[in-house]
Image 1 (cartoon, protein in one colour):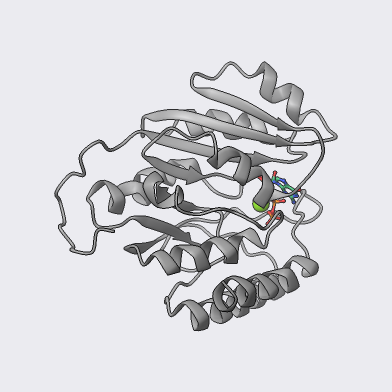
Image 2: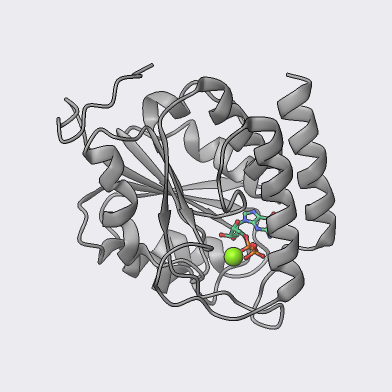
Length: 242
Ligand SMILES: Nc1nc2c(ncn2[C@@H]2O[C@H](COP(=O)(O)OP(=O)(O)O)[C@@H](O)[C@H]2O)c(=O)[nH]1
Ligand SMILES: [Mg+2]
């Protein structure tokens, strides 16, 4: 594990960038999202999209997409974001892995800022925070913000990390760090689980402020209060009992 901060020294072998995209019933956004991933100023080595047993046109749209470097994997039935990422992580071949949701809440144009601490060999893991930074943040649900803060507080108390946004989609890893982590949670419990497992590896973690184009339930948002309880369960389980 690199423990000495050696800023500005390029890390040998970096960077081939892998973008992993869990997709469940995202027919309205997935092609636009893939276009935005391709349009980032960062050269993308591969995009691994996992269709998580969608019942809409997501799988067909992914199959028809003519995007260089796109690999499509499929679950024959729906299993959840954590399960979709477990499948994706097993297939990555890049040096840096970026998690990207298939909706348009997070903007791939922000990849350069997210990977910069890793490219400069300051960080091994980067979390994008919706609660930092001067970019646009759509004003959506107050109680989601409260739940996010409580989940992040509980996670931080047990990891002793001072993160501001554990539930963020934008989590970026050196792939050698990710290779040491096995995802067990199938659904959104994955977010605090991977945070706990990252913390145990004691890598250099950075946060970067990101924009947030939040969507409403009418627009397709799916996370709910049950996922909040599962998050607390996952925080206790993976921090205290592993
Ligand atoms: N909700 C949900 N999302 C999934 C599932 N499997 C994969 N995903 C993907 O995980 C990402 C996050 O889900 P999303 O519904 O945007 O979460 P939310 O925006 O927090 O409500 C999206 O890219 C989904 O397509 C699943 O079983 N349920
Ligand atoms: Mg979303």
